[in-house]
Length: 255
Image (cartoon, rainbow, N blue to C red; front, side):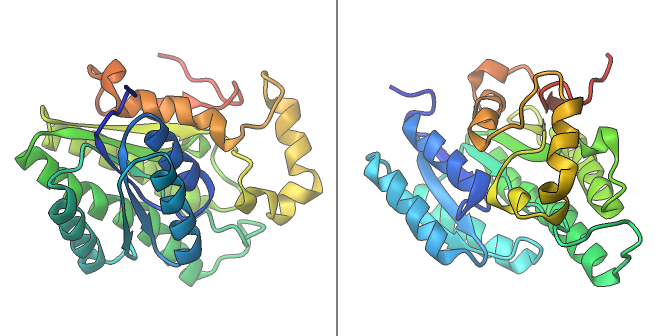
């Protein structure tokens, strides 16, 4: 019996990267997994195959989370298939990966980052969370970032967007209480394919972060799985509206 035996878990952006790792991790703990994707259909199929190989049920849903109609359609499809969702992990986020400096001010890039990270996260929490509240309750975990502590001289809109996610976390933690818990993981730099392909990461940024990190290593996606499962599961049942930092000590905050 896994920690999420026969629970229904939805992971956004699980066609690749950290989302795919999370989907498989929940399946290993006994969950049936709703694999969400926007454009990574091939990756989503591979994630779904991995879930099925573990003996768990799966459902693929496609949606642009920045579009409310898409989110509503995916929520309706998911609840129609499984009858409920016990855990929602909002993993999708735009980091403006191609931007190299704050001087590169592009309104379209700013709009896209804010639309995905804030609007998209809000739409997902609202549509899935309200249905959770009307049924058996559940847990929502937003994948945030330590950038809210350190700031981002490269892409300020990313820091602003992730700070917005904290506002959503606190607001919906109150709105959906007591049946639905909402928390955010403050993730560190995580060596996904997207990060490793970033220009600054290839030209000194990685070494700079390593020097500043007390634990002396860059997180792999698997390093972040445990904290997400903790926030999603019963061990954190008395936590809601919280921001849990997991960054190897790169940034430290007081009480």
